[in-house]
Image (cartoon, rainbow, N blue to C red):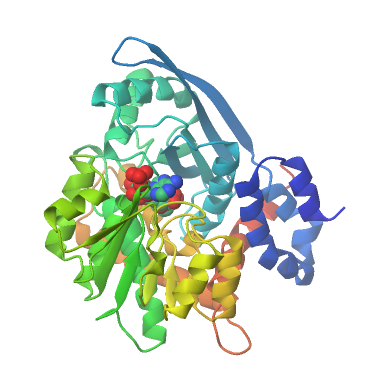
Length: 442
Ligand code: NDP
Ligand code: 2IT
């Protein structure tokens, strides 16, 4: 039977997972036709099947003393090149399909970084929004009371993702340490005073901009004066905006699930610092930007892609940029799309970008800076040492340049245009595939 059809039949009701597998298969299946060893060893078939999936009950008491029940997950996708590694997402939409797509993408992303990390993802349908700190703490403790037996610094090292930031990582770390009675680097994204790495909070957003800079360099261009539209206003969006501004670009949008703000005059470093405080300390909503900066506009329940820009950086969530948005961006002259989020563009949008020769960089390459610095956090924890910011930032820069070069190597077309999606898919696949062949049928 046709392999893709077989995968679809094996995974009913998992549309995001099927979408991610199909997008990768589009480049890998032709590649393995001309490299038959991968076919003989059924590498792609095996990569589409998680090594292990753990699903568990998370019961906790809310502030009113009432029992709440959520579902916890960890998808341990692939450990061919290193311990399982990938974030935890706390969001009401979390389900097995979403976590399998994320773990599948993570396997290729982690391989692209060049660091020894396998792929995983986990999380819960718990919604941290509107919960007190004590409720979040009790949830995190209950979540870790089950998860701890499935993870470890040489086995599986989770980190943050949507809804999981430094507060949640800290509560989970505290509970892990309490149960195991050991202080190890079992999570990344830790506080700077207790094993965290400098630049980890900034890494995904900064890495995204370093990647865009590499493309611009290949076009003998720079970020200076470029108009940038960003979606999201969380961790990735904040630091993508910060680095864009530092490099002389003009950032004009940010968003959340209620809509987007458009600041035609540009979000300056000072305004961005205000946004970071709004989101991280006060846990406010992006529309409050107008209370502080009334010259901006808020578009309720809309996404930023109708705004004229040179560079679009979707940094919120999956499938937040569809074919209609892609057409609008292309018509408005947008030349570069870098995915800070995982799979934010629908398959139809990606086809349109490729057809229009927009420089489109998929998340597994463009947002790999986050997990790359997580890998460096693991290195520092093993050394029992902590590097200066400059050193971590330099390494992040080198890693992003390296991923760009890998994409060019595997993605250059006959007419010289680079298909970054093809480059990232094949470039990420080869190392994992070769390791799987070496390690036999397991
Ligand atoms: P945060 O929780 O810090 O921020 C998420 C942002 O996206 C918020 O502004 C949120 O708005 C918005 N958002 C989330 N879900 C939706 C939705 N369904 N519709 C519209 N907006 C939404 O998460 P991160 O910044 O860490 O993650 C953002 C993306 O980047 C995700 O795709 C994640 O997988 C990816 N990523 C994250 C990395 C990291 O290191 N953190 C590394 C690599 C990729 P609201 O507050 O309204 O929910
Ligand atoms: O999607 C991702 O790469 C992340 N959420 C970061 C994972 C990590 O282990 O740092």
